[in-house]
Image (tube, rainbow, N blue to C red):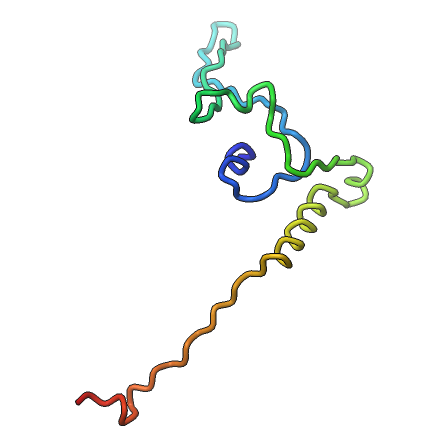
Length: 114
């Protein structure tokens, strides 16, 4: 999800680089001893034919460490930074509030059909 979020330009990524492991497997045949065999079979690549995520991860636009001590205290530095950034962006780019036009009056003499 961070890869597509970043690629689509939905907003800023805030936090730490993702771990970079998106290669998946489609099947894992069972063995007689109860184990299984698996092999990588898919990964994330871009329209230019490059592997963008594997062994690299997705870097955030704003890096914020997730401090375990603050987390134990009920704080979330990454979420708090994200809220701060969004609030600043809303101040700079306020949400437009369209104004409803007045309701038409179909009963007035001027609106009567001729």
